[in-house]
Length: 249
Image (cartoon, rainbow, N blue to C red; front, side, top):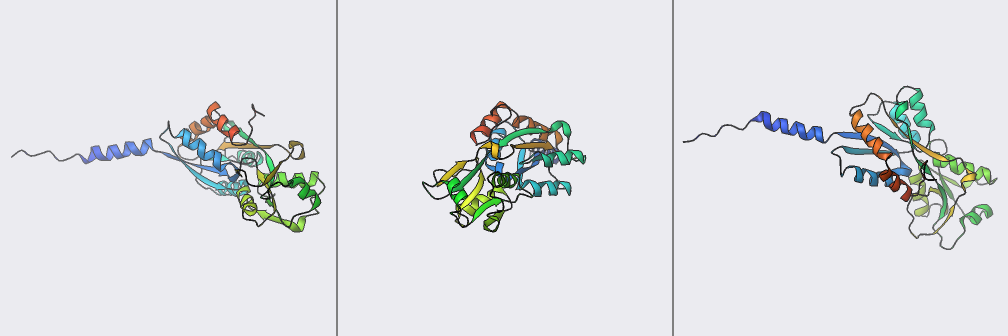
């Protein structure tokens, strides 16, 4: 009778270890306005990488607070420049890693077909107006600046519906809980309703920065993903998603 040698438990555990190494994951915090293009970018990136990219989504303010409180996140894609800069100033993020990955654009949207959102806003022919919280969401801060530029900031203070982020603002309008809403140009409304593409001179440019968080696992993997975001391939996706970049404005 021929005895077969026992399988090596060492080789199987070694193989499992190799798989684990190949499938290292990074945790990425992304502002809610950028979720759709980020998912497209991750899909493209993972075609040629074994790194798994996991997302944490929220307003820039809430994500900044999570990172400041020690959340295990390797990268932060904010909707502004101030919050990544604050992490750098506190020593929690790498100054050399910071990039401006996108420049956001603001729209005023209503689900009413053949309407003029600007006329609705100026004339007051609406019940509720949605915008993201200006205290935590850069798109909300930009919306507040537009209202101020038009001399309407105080006029409609009691008609505001405040979302914690731009995604929630979108839902308020889509669901009919608000007649008008300030949204990101990147949010897909399809052919639904009417929009006003707000002139950029009415608000400060929404420059969105990303930064590498210090003292986290898989720093090299996170750096690789950040380099991909700065590539021409990634920039094409970003521009097609309704943003501009520093070299494509």
